[in-house]
Amino acid sequence: MIPCHVCGTDASTGFIRGLPPAPDSQKLALCRRHDTPENRIALEKAWKDMSASMMRTVMSVTEHKARPVLYNLTVNFKGGGMLSFPCANCRTTDQGTLAVEEQDGGTVFIPMQHIRDYTMRPASESP
Image (cartoon, rainbow, N blue to C red):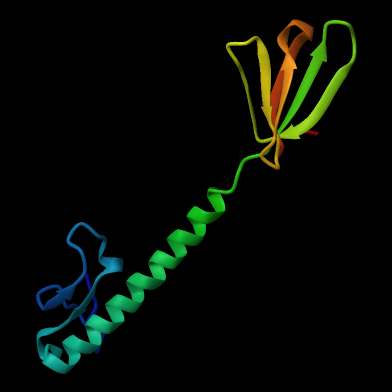
């Protein structure tokens, strides 16, 4: 059921504004009694405002998720010793090094011949 924008009665058979695949909660309508040119203009404005509000909400959630994920990298060396630091990403290169992308955008290269093992965990999971 899509309620009438003016009186709240079922307006499923009246004038409906919204995208066809969208759920009814994202549509606005006018019943046959309130379907006038003036009400259609008001309904159109209300639908545009509602759509803009939903887009702002979606964009704010997307922006939050788009922030870079930070990791904690722990490197254990063959000769003993350990190094732990935050990073944005790491990968092995064809030249036999571990390329570590730092938070500030810089890159640190650690020769793989000196590394016994390394682990990378999301910063949110690290102790």
